[in-house]
Amino acid sequence: MSAIDLRSDTVTRPSPGMRQAMAAAPVGDDQYGEDPSVNRLQERVADLLGKEAALFVPSGTMANQIGLKVLTRPGDEVVLGNRRGQVHLHARLFDGVRAMYS
Image (cartoon, rainbow, N blue to C red; front, side, top):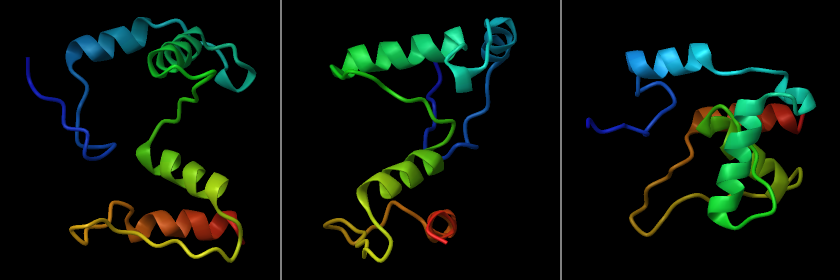
């Protein structure tokens, strides 16, 4: 089995089997809670993590933006970094955050 690189939303390419599974998956409108695949995924993750519910978002960037929006208010200062001086959130993300508060 080959490794799956999760550094970015665009690094890992779906295998032929993954593409086939996506094409055959039952679909519905997830905005109305009618997508059985998304519903099952959210329920499974919530169960795995022992949480009441989970929310699927299609990208890490979207997840980061939601987290910042939930945890901050306009005018809050966000300090990024870890003990090694590395920053996980990139400057591009903040263009979206700026738009949310505009």
